[in-house]
Amino acid sequence: MSQDFEPACRRMEWLDPFYKAVWEKAYAEGIPISGTFELTPRCNLNCRMCYVHLPAEEIPKHGRELTAKEWLRIAEEAREAGTMWLCVTGGEPLMHPEFPEIWKGLCEMGFFITLQTNGTMIEKETAELLERYPPRGAKITLYGSNDQVYEAVCRVKQGFTRAHAGIRRLMEMGIPIQLVSTVIRQNEADVQRMALFARYYGLPWMATGSIKPSVRGADSQAEEVRVTEKLEEAEREQIRRRITEHPVDITRKPCTYCKDYRLGYWVLWDGSMRFCSFMNEPDIPVWKMPFREAWQALLRYEEELDWPPECKRCPVSKACAKCAATLATECGSVHRVTDEFCQRVKKYYDEKEEKWKLWDRSM
Ligand code: SF4
Ligand code: SF4
Figure 1 (cartoon, helix red, strand yellow):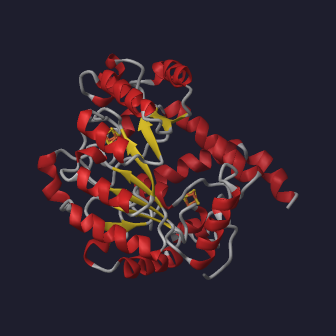
Figure 2 (cartoon, rainbow, N blue to C red):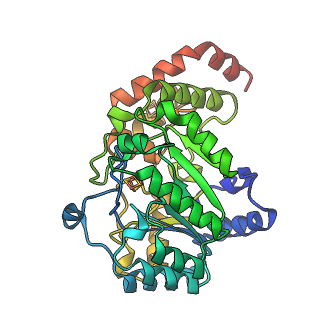
């Protein structure tokens, strides 16, 4: 490491002290303790803001899905390298043609697994599989409180009815569930009812309006459907927090600000290992190389990746809420900025300029 930083896990108050200690050690030693396996870009829904989903006929244009055997080889080596926490996601992970075999294999390896699903496919066989091999928790995306809203967001019929049934089945099995909602124009007016739904079942619920354009081939309508006013508000708030609480130190490399720095990784559906799923680099082909070598290559990438030169001489860099993923998705590459993005940041910054000056003088 070129510099020592406070690991992000120290600010994760919800983390149990035991796990915190484990994460600290992983950070210090560069152990890949937490991984995400994005099994497939397939999905039975077709959400307007999705940055991953590809129709089956489009998949070969972008890559090849890994087989169960390939996933389990990567998993076995990841476990030997230190992975304990695994998030299994997609697309819709249950759509992988060999999902049962992959799931059973991962569970038998003893990972703490979180299953991230849209909940609409928890039917008889899957329910039996999950009952026999339960995840440690399920993160279920909730896009509305009725079928009409699901149709507007996910462009399918009876989406809510099916997700509701899936949630109830998992609850009956005693699997801890967290609901997560992405808010776009099409479900904005339904937010309170989604909150009530979560409350009715006593489930934790989180909503976000932060959606990023896809840089991975998905036909995302992010730009058109995001609730711009709310996002502007959130960006202003981020700048305020940077100015008053956590200014960005531009001498720190981009990845150092993320909780996954030195301890987490993504394996995309085509077998590339990356630091973050929103980014379009690096493409470390873990599907055809030993896991440990791929992990070392990712650590090197994290150490070497730097901000674009414009950011290093930018007068508002301390307040700018960019990260590697924001640059990749908003500016097309983590190595460059665009006028449009920077002008927006500078406009919000200017609104706070007086406060900024006061803060600056007090440093
Ligand atoms: S956002 Fe999730 S549920 Fe919607 S299409 Fe994408 S992968 Fe499927
Ligand atoms: S405003 Fe633009 S140049 Fe300045 S720090 Fe942010 S992204 Fe970089």
